[in-house]
Length: 231
Image (cartoon, rainbow, N blue to C red; front, side, top):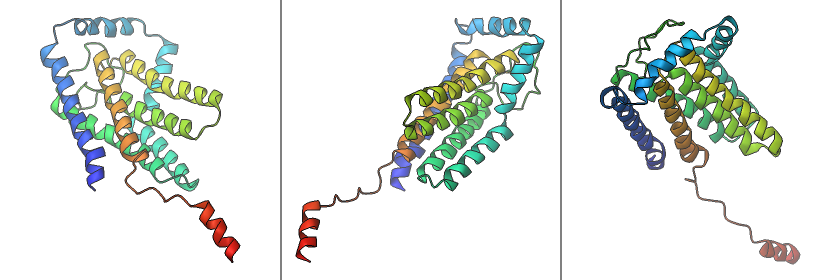
């Protein structure tokens, strides 16, 4: 329990404090500073660039990162990991990273009151703050977590590169989608990358690479051989 507290819970509390600090800095301290003053121009430019094909693509990325899609994909991946008899740390790592980012996202939105960009919103605005982006954070934790698990098991550098490329492009596409659809400021999605990235890091060291159990004692092969011969 002490190991879990030191390696997971305390770092997550520290991360929550960091997210609050970033949110307050963006909304209260640096609101009139560059580059934050240019954020409205970014959202306005993306609104002006809207077109049929781009809007359709943005809907796809936005949908695969909504709450129910993330829950469904994460649950499916965890079940596959369990059924294929992977070490218990792998499904726990993935589920823990996704759950941790969601909790910190929700608690941060309750503390940081930031309005959505002053453009047309293409989705129904949830009652949470604009900072950070829940879609971006969830997609980053889930798909980068899956890529990491694949990389740890992969013996093919080519396939590893393909998986990393695809699974990193998904959260990047989600981030651009949330900006395009007028739901978030650029700094909102940057904050989400920080949240998800650090949740993955914490769960990697606290769960996936935890060494709380004592390592098995090495077998003395010479002693084993001599015992076998004596029999």
